[in-house]
Image 1: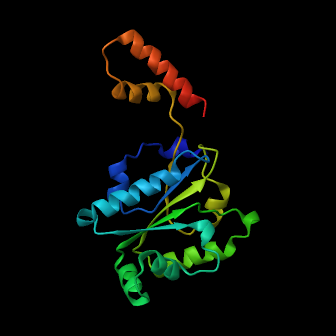
Image 2: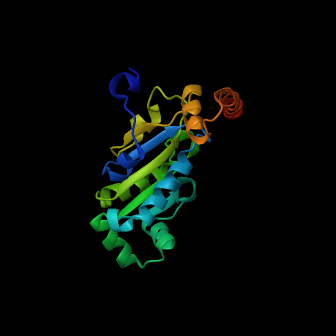
Length: 193
């Protein structure tokens, strides 16, 4: 059964910010998953007075033999006691880019560290990204091995109609024919990537 058959809905930026759920963003390479994580981090930093959460960015590929607490200490420049205290309270949000459950990549150590971290600090929200090309199913390796109750969010490319709608908002609407011509040019440019 396809994921979309069960639970398809759109999630907006504010829903992501205000949710307490762990989220995993799935999508093709270069679709904007990392950019989304960075944008969320900026929002949490800029609006710290509202959210009261400290964002921490971690690239899954760089964990290697390090413990999550060590990585967070390096990122925040806080001491171990302070990091553990903030983790226990759930006041960090971990942005984990490039999560990978593929067995062929020998990432069992990193995956175990991630699951142990989640077990030790269940109040800490994790928002991650995962490269996956099929937007109709959750990857088998994630279903079989992931122990974190993620809400799965698929990021897909914009359709021509959506690009045109965005471009109309960007372009002045003085001459309809010229605007349509510019839109076609822009859509073709976007589509060529």
